[in-house]
Length: 112
Length: 113
Image (cartoon, rainbow over the protein chains, first blue to last red):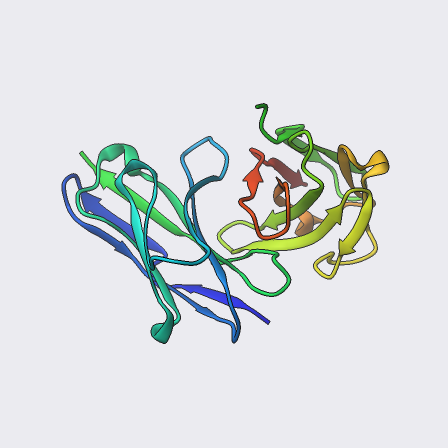
């Protein structure tokens, strides 16, 4: 069975600070990896995804994530956060069943 | 294209009552998924439809939950009778094929009092 662990449950940053949210998964086979974001009052939106190829994936709004297979990790990064990045972020992995398994989410608050 | 639509957006019901949630996937998406998030916890998979067939319902918590997708279009999730622990946000997602990007609806926040 696959599982996802997000290490930071709550992160508070000031604008312009750099962001890195940790995500580790457990699954023995080929995986697809996702980061989703839920802004206050809105639905879950796909930030970026990794299926194959270049392990450094660029998504929307300046986010990127790096798949490190040896570490079973898919950390999300952004060099300079904005107040509008305040949201909840979810890492997800899908393996053989193609059904995504989600982590608990990380609540990010960015102070202006 | 229209996104995944869920309604109602909020529902408050008393313990023991019945509630039916609806999800309209993106047109042409054969795969439809139901998820639930209890406050502060992870988003948990409930079940997966391919067209009108239940492909995987391993996440359904118990037999008080019944999901249908007649005709392979919209889906309903009925909770009968509702219990306090059923409170949470119920998400629906659809995808064109398994493993492709999933588009989520805005969710239904269910509160059982």
